[in-house]
Length: 352
Image (cartoon, rainbow, N blue to C red; front, side, top):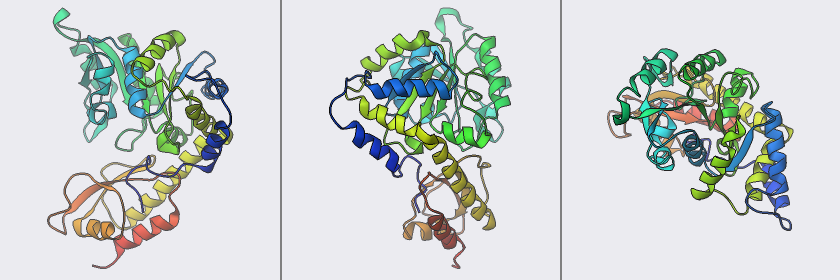
């Protein structure tokens, strides 16, 4: 009954087998391994982007921070939502790796602070670069797909946001830690959700979808390649035994494993959401991928935790009025079994 995060589950056997195979003998280091050549070819093919520059790093924070620092000068500001992972959960890594660029928050629609709107983005951008040398200059826009609250930008919404960035000649970055979950939910192609709607760079997640620890950074304009290589090395994220990153990503891209894992995770979440709705649990956001925010009484939370369930309370402590509703985040990964979900739901409906 583990719903704490999708980055805490097991690694698919195909990935472990690929690592074992890569461990035989010797290979050139620092990304010159044969597997990386194939990874680049496959990502270019999957994204329908034959000139894309492709790089691997071990963490999502590194992917986002290094990508944004490549797109941003130290005297510029990065536009993102108040709930953005780069704002709330990366310990100022984008600011650090960019050499001091700040973050400017774009408010979302009422009740949807995880998603920016074109109107809010345009207004927020317009307020910057208005004080000459005394204020920050306009820099890249970064959005998260799936958002930090489990919602998804539609292709139309992405296109509208990209149009705003183009009005101001700013690059658009996508934090795709759960890229595959969003893509299968939208039933679109990777190209549809990125460069075809105006995205310039994407952090293509793997760790939350089954990998041991690999993310790909993709620039659709290869002019950024050399600078990213330098920043990755200078930032301490160029692996000497790079083949172990490549082997994971290559297995991920083989036989649609990345898509299949996302489908499983989303299906598991839909199954859990259906069960929670039967219990009349109120939802904070409509789940659209593999993450749910819903409220339960404190007494129910206590019963679930006592039985070994793992998830995060969201808007209050466990101590307090046992009847009071407290929201929690529930995340499903590719590997959790329906039996565990049924066990979890049975505990919720168990009489006091």
